[in-house]
Length: 193
Image 1: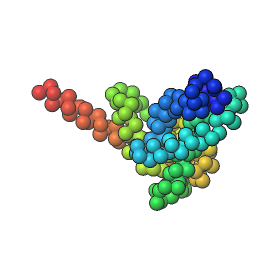
Image 2: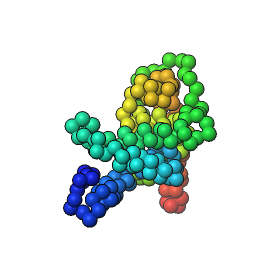
Image 3: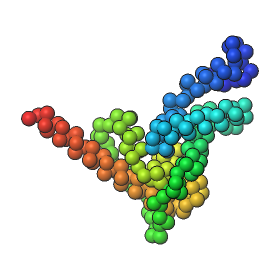
Image 4: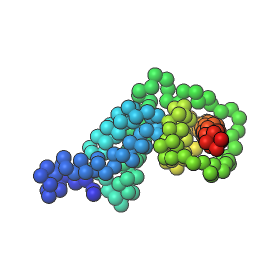
């Protein structure tokens, strides 16, 4: 359902349309916010702020010019999350991001992570455990499909710093996945005794 302030079929068209838009999209938009903030409380704040921006600018949304409604809303949420992180953290957005002096390889290492038996919630928990800088770069690169150049411009860091942070995020996640697998293997061994 596309939001319309002109929808006169409902008793209160504006409120009912906003409610329907929110009900349909809030769950997955909250997940986007959670990936960036790392905790539900901040994610809910970002969702609220982002949804207010969506409501205020929905009439300027044009399908042909902007792409799908979902993509347009996702961009608003991602930008709102990045602004929230910048504004609400005591340290700068990318605390712990050291400029990279060495050349970072442009090739991605596509480790085979197949075989992991993780639920969506468990995967989300792992991403939320990432330090803020790693998590931000990881989300922009992996989930939003930004290039390292775009991430660098967006966050005010070098391309190599973006690459380095992605590499560190992957290393962190791989370590946590291996720890998780050890727990699973131990539990299986114990149940077979």
